[in-house]
Length: 294
Image (cartoon, rainbow, N blue to C red; front, side, top):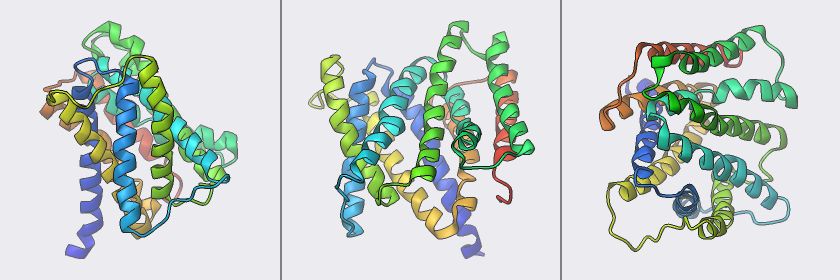
């Protein structure tokens, strides 16, 4: 019985960690830290953490003309550009709303997969995409869905990150990783991304000097960065142990945990339309899954 429950416990733990990063990020941006400064230090923390994992696993980090372009592309579409948008969105939008928006990833991934020839047409999955998008239309169209109507302007900004994450997955599926393993790829991308983000942070005056009096935002940011790196590593391991079909179910739980943590930590509350949107989004995620997924 214990063995049978183990993979599900892993899913719950990973989803709880991933969901926790959103309200922690909300706290991190609460004092006005600029997005490029946050992105730089997030990448540095991720590179150090994943570098240690790589050393522990006794795996070298590929560094050649074949793999470097992959590091650059993943750094840009996996962190620098989407986080530029998501940090600005979460500074304004409720954390729970951002959790719902991130649930668009598997739904947006499907039409991108069709365009790149990574997948075949399915009426059921197209319907799932429409159901998921209806959740966004509900949030946008119902006046009481958001605490402030001005927040509507940041809904499109919040969709940029899931759109790029969806493309990132399809990019890897279509063109591979340049010979690097998943953890090696993210480690190398974090290193390259830090090099890209540093001049952006300094040039825009957003560099964050770590030698300062640390408060809740700084500790929340470090915790979020470490948790993100840790759960990503754990996710890669369970994919290898239990398969991608089983492991992808974590996406449902991340959304639920993200909203739950926001209610507990940030005291967020949501109106009826938001809960309906959550149900629609989870339904869309279920329908858009590849045929044969558990």
